[in-house]
Image (tube, rainbow, N blue to C red):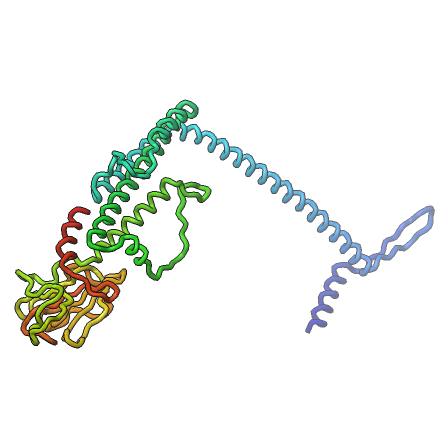
Amino acid sequence: MKSTSAGAFLSRLKAAFPDREFIMRSQGQVRFIRISSRLQIAATSVVAALLVAWLGTMGTIAVTRLSASSEYAALLHREAAVTSAESRVEAYRDNIDNTAADLARRQHFIEQMVEAHIGDLPDDKQAGETVSDSAGEAAETVKKVSAVVPEARGLARIEAEQLAFAERLTRYADRRAAAASAAIRRLGLNPNAMIAGSSRAEGGPLMILATSADGTLDPRFQRMGASLARMGALENGLASIPQVSPAHVAYVSSSYGFRADPFTGGAAFHAGLDFPGPLGSPIYAAAKGMVSFVGQRQGYGNCIEISHGNGLMTRYAHLSGFRSYVGKEVGAGTVIGAMGSTGRSTGPHLHFEVRIYDRPVNPRPFLEAARNVQQEIR
């Protein structure tokens, strides 16, 4: 098929370029010049190739000129954009006072929100406090910036306000931490040991905090963070100390310490407080923590134990029913069970114990002092 097509094409080509003869007379002589079909085709091919080459060259020149023209236009556009950006700088300079005013309003809003939720932040300085006071230095900075860069006067004032706010918040955290620490000591516990024992399994992606573009943290803000963390740890520890009466009853039927055993009549040690009340009346968690045991123990009958961290545990015994389960997070005052008379008991009551590293301690000082301490802290 291909051979037939090629033959037909050659036939048509020869028909278009038939053999030609030319007669030439010169000085009385006649000559015949014959130009074959093959020679005509070859000459035509050469001319066509030269034409194609010329057209390609002209096209390349045209494309090159067009590209250069486009690049030049783009360059002019970029120069125009730069000129526009430079003009905007002046506009920002003119509006820097408005920008500073907006930032000042934001700073004032933040301070209002903080004080609305935690109370007034202290402006006064007390003896023994180690919080820095940048008021004088900040005022001098504002003065110098105003003289050298007048348009940045508002921003310098905002910076001074931020530093003053950070120092006031640090004083607030330090004073609350000191109050919590003193309260914990009044309850017979060591606040530093409570902070050390509050650490638990932690983790997560690293997210470095910084106050500067170079990644550094201003020491005053670093101190503020440390003070807030200490305050949180101490107040969390204080909240884990028994502070809520585990039963709403009028009196305690048996106190902590030595007593006459109700069954044998002999001297015996009583490791908790007994709260008598109606069968089935609610029993409350004395402090926030995690339920660590629900079941029966010899002599205690049905009982619940709550771990509060730092080796502190409370036990609720002789229950008639459970309202909790192991692993449950409970808050102070959460209902965890019902009063009963299971185990070694002569009637419906709650046997309540406070233990530190499994050593029983008198619960009464905690219940009497913790409520007043919490009110003082707040």
